[in-house]
Image (tube, rainbow, N blue to C red; front, side, top):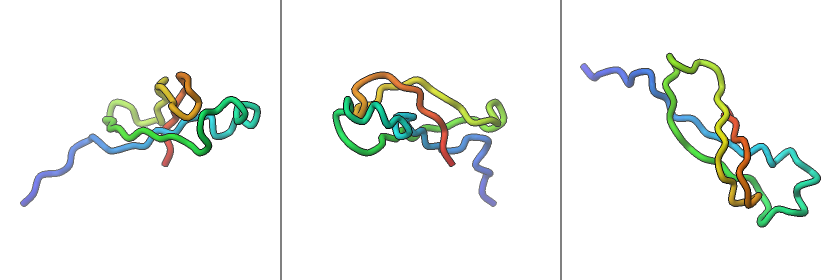
Length: 67
């Protein structure tokens, strides 16, 4: 029998700049940027937000977990 995978799951973080219509003029590139990471769903059952660098916006932005 195989072991269970545990409480860690893979999540995708997406930049919030996709909803900013005013910022589209200052963006370096068009489109959206995403990070992939893992989280422990027992410790953080809700969706997480992490402040990371977005190369599309050329600045640090809040990245939110998407489904």
